[in-house]
Structure formats: structure tokens, C-alpha cells
Image (tube, rainbow, N blue to C red; front, side):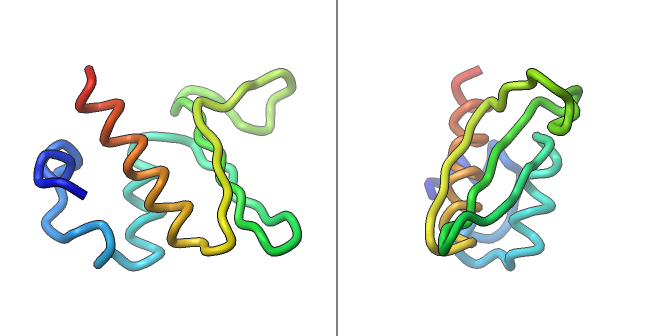
Amino acid sequence: MSIVFKEVLNIDKEVSELTTEELIKLIRKYHQIDLYTVDEYWCLQLFDLTVCPNDINVSCDWENDDKELNTVLIMAIEYIAECIYDN
């Protein structure tokens, strides 16, 4: 992840150096999270902070999946950083 993303997210370490807990906490600063598994895949959905993911007819802002949990968490961090940077 580029230096710009590190500055945008205000983190000291490279994203790849963060623990799973640190990744989740960083994502949680910006979005509600729905994390679940389907077969061997980890699935992650991000929602606006003002939205309850369990409400009916609520759409997520972003979703992705991967066989590795940290990979999908890092993809979410990259999405968040890009959104912040673009604004």
C-alpha cells in the first residue's frame, strides 16, 4: 500500500504488518462490518456507519471474498483508503 494510503488512514505500519485484530479495528473506524463464511471463503461486507447491516432492504457499500481472511481485510482497507483519497 502506498505512502499516500498510510497517510490517509493515519497508520504507522504497512497494512501487511497489521494483525487481524488491528485490520478489523481499522475497518470498523470507517464502516459497519458483516463478516461471514461460505464454504472455504471469508466474505466481508461494508456498510455506512449510520446503517444497521441487519435491517431489511439495506445494501452494502462494498463486498468481497477470499479464501484468506487477511486478504479480504486488506482489500477492504484499500477500498476505504481509495474512497477517502478520492474525496
